[in-house]
Length: 58
Length: 241
Image (cartoon, rainbow over all chains, first blue to last red):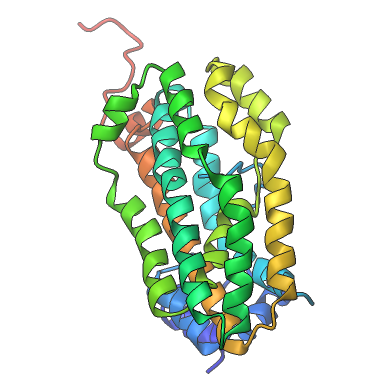
């Protein structure tokens, strides 16, 4: 099972997903513990929102 | 590819949801009401930065003899701690401009999301490795404010410029902080485990920042959305019979 499939099975990524091929490769190159973390914290992948003026300092 | 670039690429996979939540805040029709709450959140994070760096310094110094990476982190903290000192006090000054007193801030209990955001770093530093803190800092300092954007917010909202002093200051200094952080990450001899802890800490930070901004906005529903959901009566266009 690829990382992508694991994340889709955990509903972290929608089926079908909107990731580019480059991002798909990045996801599949994540280490198992990194994939587990994404699932555990219920990360949101596959969101294509792009906004760079986020001004985050917190 | 450098360690910092690899980390940034991992963060960018999960960042859109966080960016969407932050964007919803900055463009919210009631931002003038939410802004003091946002500054309180900024204060909650700011006052914990130096204690977190001090803990990473202490832990890194203890491990230094047998762990070169921990030693590099202790050195980074030694340099970064003075740069972060008193930033929380600057936020209190910005809050005072909006009529929020230091006493009222001191009395407030921070939201649980704040405790989670900061608290997990204590856990990672003490129980995994102090490098976790650099994943957290990469998320918080990796995308510094842009002065032109802040100017646009002031114009749009009518909020006093003096309430943005901390933000303008960070627009100046955070680029240097980010470059220093990347330089530190890139010169360390990171193992597979180190890079994983960095990423896991960053992923968790992104998620908790997203939740923080979503909670801020959710507390101030915009009227159009309330009308659409039926929780606010629609505007009467004709007199009632």
